[in-house]
Length: 69
View 1 (cartoon, rainbow, N blue to C red):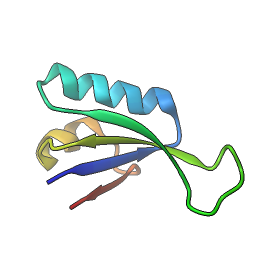
View 2 (tube, rainbow, N blue to C red):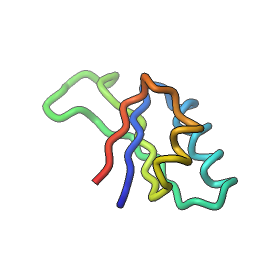
View 3 (cartoon, rainbow, N blue to C red):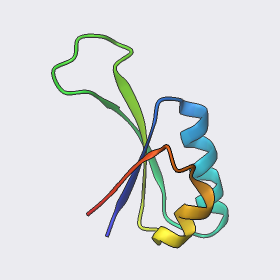
């Protein structure tokens, strides 16, 4: 299972990635553009990780968009 955590701010995504890495989890940060948008600012910084939901719950605020598959 891979979990994606979406951020508007690169520094927040990087901070989460560093915290997950320090805990020994695989992690990647990818800049994703919104489909069909021409605006250069229509992007999300997405942290990809297989870390368990309980680990993420301690590191991520409730108002952050999180999705898993």
